[in-house]
Length: 491
Image (cartoon, rainbow, N blue to C red; front, top):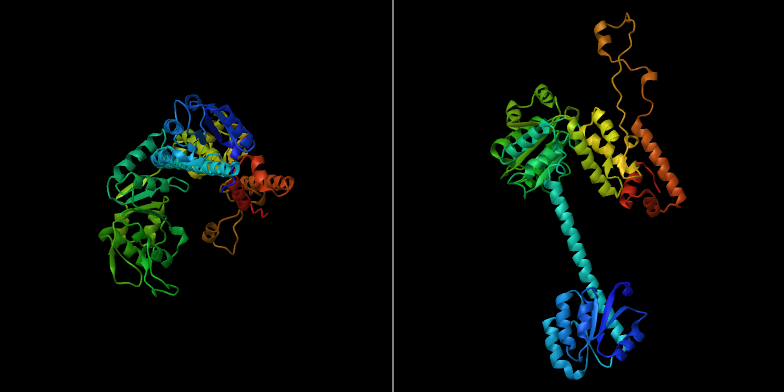
């Protein structure tokens, strides 16, 4: 039986004789949280404000029998377990009551205190299980609803909503292409919301219930990307000990998101073109053709198309991928969206890390708006997450905001030409910035050092107790473990 605190559950005892109630009180007052009622009418009135886990009733009471009372009690408190104290002569009526659900357990009189205590504990354990299951279902429904909102709500779903005309145009184009089966080319700078846009297109399309498969192409080079996308037959190459389906097959009827697929081998180009034109794939080492119905959403940083052209990527492939280009403007071109995005990220990380901060001061918003955001939305998210951790109150202030230092290109100093070095070669060689102008340590590293020292000091104060450290910083233990690992603190 589970280790429950029996005294945390209310038990209502109903009898028309005070002596019987006193006997119950004497036997169980130290073991259970007891409430008493003289007769069914008084007990029903008490149930208006009491939600007991167990209701114990004597069968033979004037005016209203125990079974009649428990039937009415079940209507008011359906979770409560009904325990009937009955004599042997009442067994025929009792069986009908048990079958009807009014009585969950019964104890024959005269009752034995040890046996009745076991019955009460079993009844409480059953009710506790029912209540816990209901709580978990409600919590699951809450999180399911939250995830649904995260997926569908424009501001949560992708940091792509905003007040700017540019983002309203992006949202409109997402709605247009989502309904079609067209492949999509998403162009944006590093840190822009390209994956989120791809997910928005998928969720807004008839393919919503089908797979959304993401492929980070930078993790695969050369033939490795081809294998990942198309799969292979056993023995197709060294190490192919089993057969495996590719990501394109896994994305059948859904969407595959290719994040920065460059460079592309000639073989991969030909295979991709066949998928885009005919919907056909062949696993490496196989001559068997499989048909797939998949939308390709492909992301590029500005300038990649020119790099493709220089690398000799098939014009037909570029043409097929560029049917519906969608450009995401950088954050510096839509500063009116910064407040809404920052507040969204603050809600996200305050909720995830159990932080108190719920708003940003006007001064903090002004500081965020004035920044250039070379890392776009991803950088904004990182800045707000750090601010939520550093803040001790409910408002983010300017001093909580720390931007990652990004060295700017330095102007090369003038120098006399060397006789042994041709002028063209001298111009081709980049000159290093003088040592005095180079950043010795960027701001991000400095903040990491501060955070590392604070965590180490807290661990020393708490004798290595991570749970206590997490409580002192007001964060969840999982968040603490993540930060310790990220900062290289091995405890």
